[in-house]
Image 1 (tube, rainbow, N blue to C red):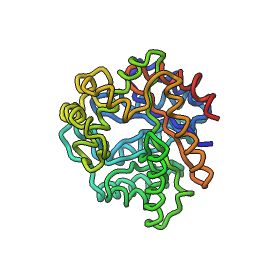
Image 2: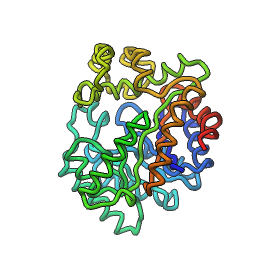
Image 3: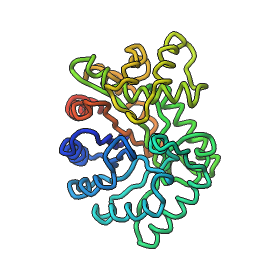
Length: 325
């Protein structure tokens, strides 16, 4: 069976996200990933202490931080502190930087900076005798080559259909093989984003914010990834991409999110009533089981979307998860 992680965007009041973390811990989720945002979400360093003292098994860490807005030695010290408070449950997720650097007007970290940062973290962890895994986010070709060579685990790739998930798996396996590594020995964390409510339109509205960022990436960052056969949606996608505001990163019910049409939600998101979401997640889950049967340590990173994150997570736990096995 694929493993489950939880990715939290910490914008609900803290008792809400703390309860979500407790529920994930009680249900055997393996990792709790927190967004690291300079301007948009509460600070994950501060919150991690609350998670550490209120959970028992789940690993805790950023998903992801970067070596630009936080100096690697500062991050090393924070992770060692989290590791001590949690009694050995810290995990470090790192990328080159997205909204955290964009809101400051900075560039992303390059591969050289990433290499130096990983060296610093490994040395600091070694000095303290701390076993803190370093997961690296997939990105462009050069960053992927580095991640496939150096990461203890990979964050990213995936898709919202079984075919897309299988293609991502093949791409990851090929990249790791080129780096001289075996995919069976490198955990893979792939996103499982969704929004669900008994009112379909409420779920759609929650899904629009995260989808706006995905659309921005497809239109402006990697236009070659726009799927063939969807030209009828491209004008709507371009309007949303051009309006994307990193000061509302991944949030629903914002001006740029409102530009995401129902047609885009239906094509690219997993959103709807619990039964509708189950119908989309179930085939992904079954494909994940087939991939895991090949020896892969696959984690679905459960990512409830929008203002209704807590509601979506509760419905996932009680209405969807029991029907996946």
